[in-house]
Length: 340
Image 1 (cartoon, rainbow, N blue to C red):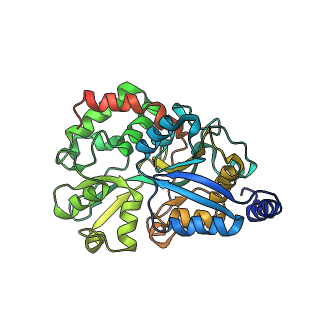
Image 2 (image 1 turned 60 degrees about the vertical axis):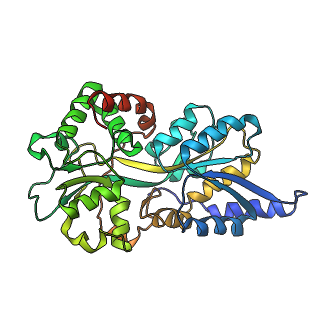
Image 3 (image 1 turned 90 degrees about the vertical axis):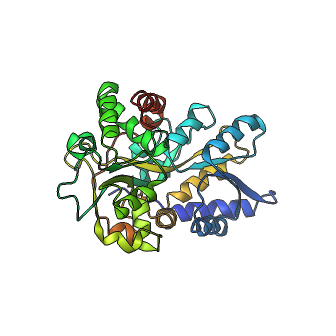
């Protein structure tokens, strides 16, 4: 078990130092693509704990990245928070992020869930699962590779080839098996589609309910949410849906992250680092993960009831920087095989 550091004590000490300084107001400016109601408690607790006010601008991650590029050195932003490793990688690749040296972050966040040069850190994960209709599928795929098996022809629903979740999944396969094998897999997956890609992950799960498909690929939190609260067209039929954590006898299940990094031109760099360290605290991890039915990244932080129902699993330990590094190649492969 990793050692516990007294994050709250460190933050309180810093807050006391701020209070005794000549600075009238402390703040951190956050650009965020998260939009979950429970994040409000996450932010208010940080403000109460530290006295540091959070100023937020929320929007689509790609739009926020373009805004940061346009603002350049004059940007007021301190922290960028996104909901996909591929998107935070785009910010790092554009030299928008700066390395962070933090003992707290290094000790609490697994190495594969942070950038090798500390440009960003993951704070919650979601798994890409295989779901199936229990009454129509006796032998569901146990691996991602099996999704391309001809025996599942005409059975699978999945999002488009331009969707960031699928780009990240294919990028992981490029990193682990090479581009030729990845292209063969993408072509096989396309051949097994029950319908043209359409809609979001929840729509793939609804496809199981409607009978349009027998197997669906979706992130874990979309289904966990339907177990926790009413999701139209899904929650009332959840008992008829089974799920598989793929590749448990191999590399492990593909995961993605909500991640954050400190911006290169951050005017409040120290406060930005304190905010990231706070996100790694036990209480913040509980808010951060349970607000969107995700998995916390810090060891021994409890799961929400909805996520607990999904069960434990082994995750792929591929460093998630690969999801960005091979993103363009993944898109090229999807285009080459005609995956819309």
